[in-house]
Length: 137
Ligand code: THU
Image (tube, rainbow, N blue to C red):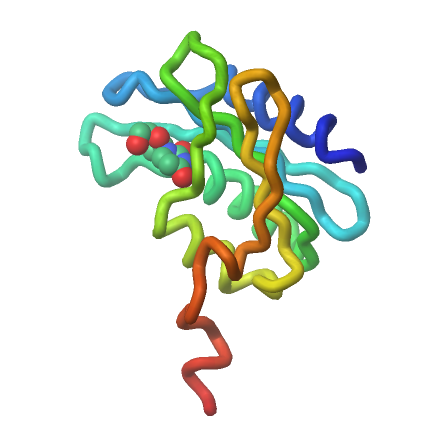
């Protein structure tokens, strides 16, 4: 799948965001190695820490359906109703993703306001990470 299409799907997922408190809507589209896409959005809560980011929503949907092999995630985020504007994944999401991918291979695709995008390997966004392999060496 072409990343422009993945970005379009992330932006579409953004439309379902429940961001009653921050008014910052985020959508994500997670591409599996066999070409399936799981979409997610941020879902906030009156108890603020109970909210979840778009990226983890997409990952949890995919993981809970048994998916384990991932290629890339596109992220589209910005103030609700405005164009996307370079929403990078938060630290918790970077750590969450790192558990399930090989960070030097996994692409994080960030949508710009004109729907163009940039691609970063996860290990660039989360260097010197602590992951499953750190526990048992
Ligand atoms: N948010 C995401 O969905 N993904 C990120 O990586 C950054 C932040 C959400 C969380 C919250 O609902 C809103 O954006 C403002 O922080």
